Length: 151
Image (cartoon, rainbow, N blue to C red; front, side, top):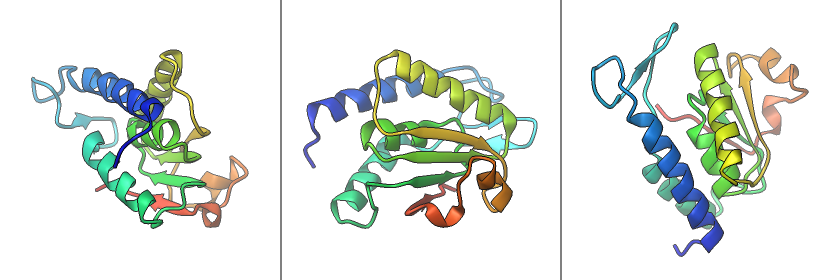
């Protein structure tokens, strides 16, 4: 799939940003394959693989690119950034871990300062299986056209 130049530029900026974040020394003493938080462990989604999957699913109309998309268990926000900034899909991330919610929000702010723009993005703290998580933002789970959850 040939990407419009702006989408490719946004993806490269996004990938560089998260590659740099991934180089931070983690609990394992090297570039972290996972991060320990107060609640548990977090393993980042591989951006290139997820982008290829999203490209395919959008191209074949398996994902409604007009959104909104829910990233259930949104971690550090990389999927929110990918779908909102590169694919222009309105995206809401829900993450239980408050440390990861803050990290996610910081990543999104940093990417905007780099000039990335696209569809709306929002990060909520809570349990993605609970209605009250969405109600606090005047949303309903039923409103999402796609739910993404990477193991």
